[in-house]
Amino acid sequence: MQSRAVLEDGLGEPVEVFSYPYGDAGANFEVVRDALRRAGYWAACLYGDGPNFSPIADPYRLERVAMGPDADLHAELNRTPLKRP
Image (tube, rainbow, N blue to C red; front, side):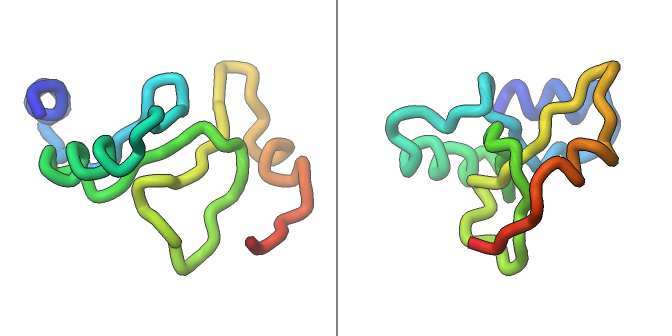
């Protein structure tokens, strides 16, 4: 909760989505998800390198695509055909 408050104070905006360090929710996901809910986050991003489809099965297990200074978003999004789960 403290890190969220620091971010919100510095940004002047609400921080509602969490990004897992190293892209991993840890060994006990239920405990982590409950802590994120208590801290006020409504979603969290893993590093799964894939798309998300609606409806979202679990907002605390959203996939994300790594983007760096040389990343090509268009190429990343078109890298593999989209398959629904």
